[in-house]
Length: 457
Image (cartoon, rainbow, N blue to C red; front, top):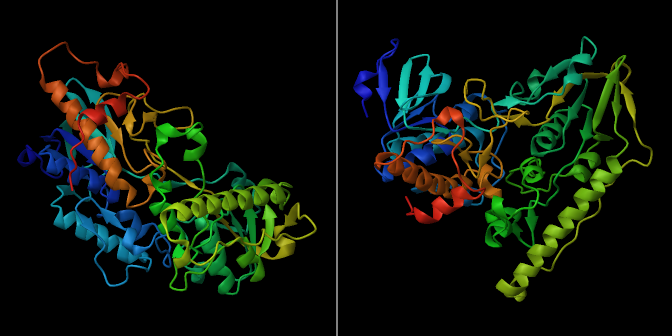
């Protein structure tokens, strides 16, 4: 690496084979795998290592996965609470230790302003200088920005609005009712915390994924891991786009390992309503499909548990397991609530737990679709030498979890090494990255993976 040529505050050029954007767990996992292959690279991070975990998450957040499942290439959880769930600060410390022990070449405090093609591959402009490279890995995260519906602008004045990025704890929420919009893991966790803090909570619910924290004496993630459900591949799905848009499961990491679902919330007093459909004259209008979406979530949970039972019957001595369980259907109010006047109901705060999206505003390449999502095939983007990490169902169901980065990084590091080797061989010139015209089959990435796949742990 020509790192000596780089100096802060100047526009001098550093040249490496690969620039990784983002020093979260995905970027660092890729750095580890590239380092084991001897591939020259640098990791650029706008803030600190694990910046999002340190500064963009609420105080009480814990991992949805048990600690024993937390691992990255070359390092696994080694603490004294394998069945616990790491707190936000513990996750940040784990990732920071990983960066140190793996010797990742991280440049913190370096904000990427533009990534664009040039004759040699790519040019990466930052607020601290310019890098040139032959390949780029985008590991800036799937959750860079909260996704807030446009109808939020129609809420009446005087109603505070927060996103999960802005919310820290109940102490910052004004006394009175709270409308939490969204019933994924984030929405349920925030609704539960605010309800416990004494706020009357209304929860607006769209499509969601219901599952128990514990099943037949073991964490649900243990079952999904053991049965191979988390390893399901992206190229084995009929509707990949839908799978990538599925909300995170309704789970909460707690010492009690309690089930957190709509029944638990409503038993505590929360009011359940349908998806927010519109806002007009201070009145929030809700979809009437609440019963249908809850029935669908109940059905899918039953299918998941049946799949686990089938697997257990052939892989575990049933005599050692508690019997199969089935859980109550979601309980809903008999009378539909299709609208609420926020002022009359005393609702002073709305929290938009309506998902997140990546931020590629600095990516000056023709690789984004109409919704601003990057076009890619299992992490191999639609431009030669451009890769992406850390997105939901990138290559496997587990891709968005910390432990899911390991296999994805190994796969993509292999593909990237093959790409760099091909560039080094004499032959016809390759397509310019900006053209996005590299010829490959739909599963070209897979074919390359099979050719180059040594492990890097």
